[in-house]
Amino acid sequence: MAQKESIGRLISSIHRNIYIYIDSEFKEHGIGSGQFAFLRALQSEDGINQETLTAKFGVNKATTARAIGKLMQEGYAIRKRDETDNRAYKIYLTKKGREIEPKMKSVSQRLTEALTTGLTENEKASVIRLLEKMSQNILAVNEKTGKVSDE
Image 1 (cartoon, helix red, strand yellow):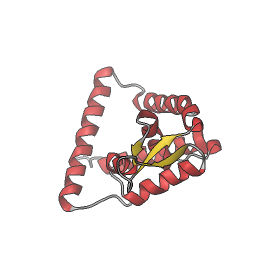
Image 2: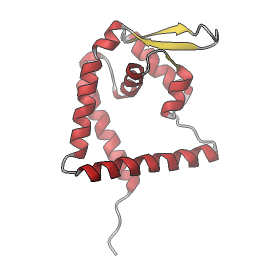
Image 3: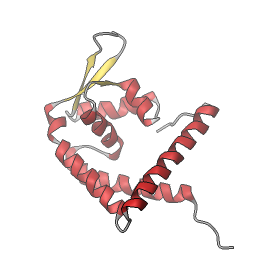
Image 4: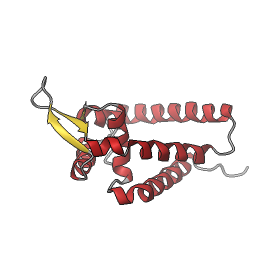
């Protein structure tokens, strides 16, 4: 029997290469792969709070704080105290954060096209469905065991 390819290794390779691509596309803008997803989330839901971002990405609070801090340092986001909860902050895009949105959408689209080249529409739908299921499976395992990402 031939050895099966490791799913984890394949996912890791895809993840690593996506990060390389994002880093190269946004180096001149001071945005790295670590901030990309957070900035895209803000472009979809401006005024979201840090705790919601933390939960959305399944990372720890320190990771979210570092990513938001870098976006603020580069002028893409600002933090304002939540009017309904003085202990919390909401994150908003700046003008600069909105201006880079078209490029971010374009890069996201090119990445999707690169990843799905040669796949039929049914295969694309299957890949998405299966990856979502795998993501939910590993999240459930980690929640059950109390593990949280250190990213």
